[in-house]
Length: 276
Image 1 (cartoon, rainbow, N blue to C red):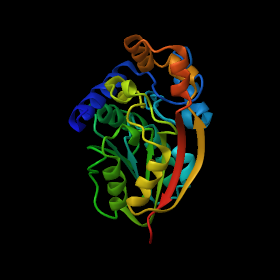
Image 2 (spheres, rainbow, N blue to C red; image 1 turned 135 degrees about the vertical axis):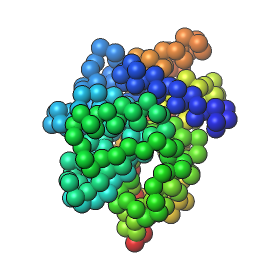
Image 3 (tube, helix red, strand yellow; image 1 turned 30 degrees about the horizontal axis):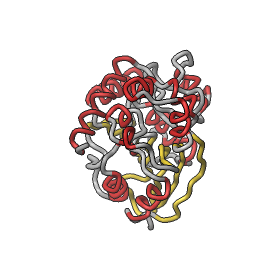
């Protein structure tokens, strides 16, 4: 699959999510069951009831695989940049942490997501949050301009992960921090999955091996890299995920193959620092 084709498909897929306001790809059982509310999905990946109540309605689309805000130890006055900010959920939570003296910047390549986030910011009267349309491989922010870069289940969607981390390194101030939740592999996926656009949108096909993911962060220049938490992506979740259901129907995947895929995927939470 070409990089351009992947980007177009992901952009189209996430535009559809805005319209449907449904969750996808959060790897906690039984996270993708359509009977479970988005709020319940979010609590399972680390958000509190207070977090969920504090943001505008429609900001949380249930797309995350962790809570980077809980890990980032944000301080008043800091500038935070969210890669793949979606409808603004993590940005609004970060805004509470950095206060009026701080700033939060959300970046997303899907115009529908940016429009939705800006609408949510207006509804919530967030004066210290802004949303920019752009690709995370080419972050629309100046060099050494932010204190913290966060991302939640998005970098796995990029066909150029090396460039994403180099861009994150570029925009961070010396001593700045990276906090990401994402999907990685511990075993290679079957070729039929790796080559599926549907699986890419569903946060599977774009995932890389855990060691490779960590090495990509290191190669960008970061140090003090730590895996703070990891959890297996259960096959029960895959079986109920709308994207996975399409894959199963099209590829006629047997149950044992589905279980094998489930043991191949992890959700991890990673922190790193830019030397300073």
